[in-house]
Length: 427
Length: 171
Image: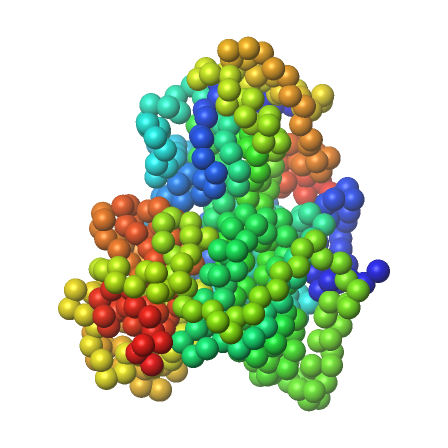
């Protein structure tokens, strides 16, 4: 019997099998941020267990509220910072070097094919784009991860999603994943791994694959996963060049993580995206999705471009295609949060930041920002935001606010026209 | 072992998410107890008022996909500090369910028909859980006994008092 990529990763990291349904895995990377980690740290201290399993396998960043906005968030940052210093955590990112965890850590080359990754953050599934098993966990799982380098999971079940056809101009990975979530519903993939395959995925950049995997959790999935290939090897090359003599050899090595042809899937889904149009959410669940053509004309108060879903350089480039030489509607507040310092500086070099600013956008530092309404960009009661983020839950961006999820292209077109707009008309 | 049960709070909707259970703006609290007043603050559900309806409740009975969304364990802690240690649902989001067992609390999945039975017992229902027998007794307009499946590993976590204690002993 063949194995899926997830089954191969599980087999390679198996520490224990307490029951046939449950496995304990060794974890390669334990990622930490300042919102869910401090309580793990203070709890370990209180128990007299303030230890870490491996200072090179723990990565930490202050990203959700940075710079801190008040005493409480300053304290959260301080607890994480003091802990990282105390234990000499090798990779800790603070002001000046920090950015959205799921954009920053891949950029640093921390995630490799075949790895196991956990973080106290549901969008950890993003890292599956590298052919890794990456799952969001709660603080207790994180605490055990920090202390022991292990985590418990149920035996993996995978659904395979084959994406074929050719995306039309103006349609992106965000539209593909929103459409998939609409089809599956918000719990259509619960307790399952979503394996994305097919020519459209193979043609996607790592940035696009990260967008795809990032929202797997919105269908309830444990992890989204792509098979590692030449695109993966090229992205990781600066970090793996000492390990392989050539990119070809890296690509060859990555094949060990590919699902076998006779692997078993609990569900198969195939879609041809050639006729897919830009997708936009309505309501308060990420599976409440419509074609942009049905949502056109909905006025918005704010447009937010950023987050672990769509704050990477490619996202900024695509929005800039629309914004170049244009001004956003007078009724719209445009906010751009480049996801990492590298994205920010690259966008400056490419003139993208200037395009955003000339269009009337405010550019913030790299942070999770408005996405979860914890720091800047919070909506007032009744306000509407067109957002490139991943959740439209009631109150997510501020009590009484409404969020419409969409791609950076659609968000940029919406900013220009002041209401939800089809980006294909502005390209 | 801990006693599980209490008066039931019925939340009659699918897909109740973590942001409704505890909004992100309260994730800046650095103690579990500080979360207590904010339980289910953003849940809009016909007539539900968290300030009045939580008082004296020990069990939540709800529909499918409870706890979807964020990984925040705060969504479990906010129940714990309000003396709610059992959630009974048709299904759970994976991370929420794991967080419950990791904290030594019970996330019981029941088939839709059993959930319907519980919802049909009137407004005042008391639940007692027999962990050893894997049954729960609900006393409302009538008394019903419902058996449930409990994964052996999850049961061990509850008996150990949570995942940290279990992992520290075994790994």
